[in-house]
Length: 413
Image 1 (tube, one colour):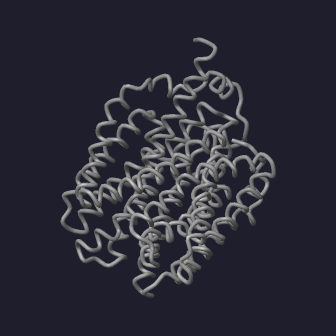
Image 2: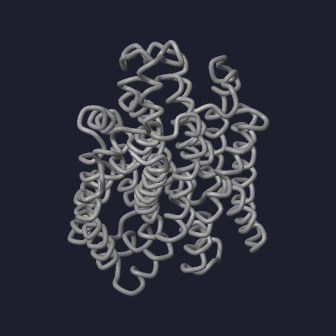
Image 3: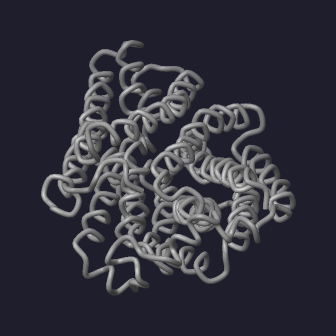
């Protein structure tokens, strides 16, 4: 093997995971621009429409351990193939839906399974085989793909809806993803699965933590770090997605044009990579706990500006919301994911990490559903925003109270 070949392979793995993450997050988050068209077409209230997204989020979270176990046993090729195939097929089927349960099954259940097969669990597990102590940096690059997905796919979906209707938009998105399936299958998966030669030799020679020697899922679940990370994922997702799914509709309600609202929310995706890189850089400078807590403070400032838009729909407040909320939408993900992989290294690492991400999926489901329900109940967004703030405060508590998270060394993978 040439001396530079592992480096090139690691870069190829990073690029692929970036694209997979872009699709895993960008496609589901583009549902925000389907909310109003579906509501008008079928006459459904907001909670009914948002339940489709809740099905996606709940499924993507609950299926995480299964995806992790499939990755540990069968490798990445099968997992990613299922992701591309299911995502394209589910979106294509959604175009033929005539009832709520059909959209919940296709755009909810199907997309949820597919997104999990392309998302955090396989990406972090694959990256950990190639980047070791640089996992936080690599994860930040891949997680920034989520922002690019929002930046590109939200306005693109709005354009497709305006041009072809919501059914046509689903047709085009589904067909495009199915076209990508064949070239994905031809990638050098055997080499990618083996991992970096130096990391393979290192893992065979010794284990860096007490939890690395083949810890099982049940053993991990008796560790406080498992439940602390689970709670952080859960409450943060509740708070973020109580807001995120409603953003485009909210901006339209306070006076912004549909494309203007979709483009503004889509632009938050351009800021997400900047936020992730900044928080990851801070991790190496001031430590993990201060970096995580600072990111929560910036998020809460963004939520405050979103609320102020209902009183004064200023472009400057909109820009402030997009800057603060968009730049921290997922900025904690690389640090939390790297912490989980450090604590629970070993042959079942992907399975354990998948179980932890149940918190993220269930949080997204509950947050998005509760946001729609609170909107319908109150007739506005004040309760939605208040609910999001309380949830975000709960999400940061494990890093304030649990010793194993407070003392996480900076810059560790």
